Length: 243
Image (tube, rainbow, N blue to C red; front, top):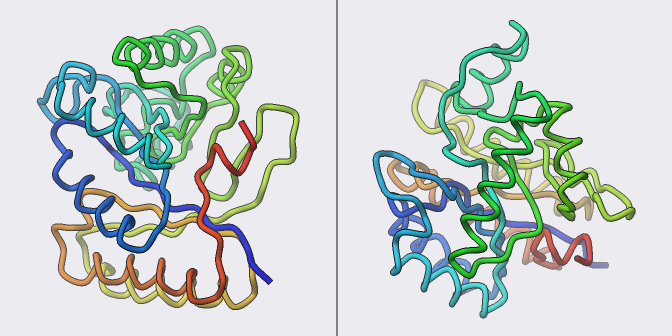
């Protein structure tokens, strides 16, 4: 019996193009379609995504091969404000860069619309949204539905906004740096093995920074290979919700 799993490549921007292409190359060799999470605004002192013709061309070509392009925040930047507990969660989950974690609905709507419009202008269509750190305020969630997005994702689930069924799908990801890095890599592989054996849907999140740390690349690809070996069926988020 097969089960669905999703691989996402996070933080796609001009500044991370090389790393993103590295991940996509590994997935292409395995026949795994992925969801590329594009940051539309300037990121890491680089230009906006739509201003880099080379990146735009590569993204369109990847989309033509079956990968999905999806919205990932606007600047993916640090944001002030919010309740104390939200700031704490933001620091843990996104190292303070969860820009949608505490936004009121009007502000979230403006940023979401601006991000989607910027990608539309570059010829990149998106129907879904993954907030940085998987953190979306209640206002953000209302704005997503109001703007007609098909889905958004949290750390534990894929949330269908088309009237379909939301799916519980835990996301496995690395946290580069720190004393727990190697233990975390082993945990990713162990969790992937357990979930695959039980045929439970899950996700594997790949980040550019993972490629800078020894062992993290191998652990993430081992997790993908374990899912494939267990008859996992790789899908994009868009395919999962049928958008």
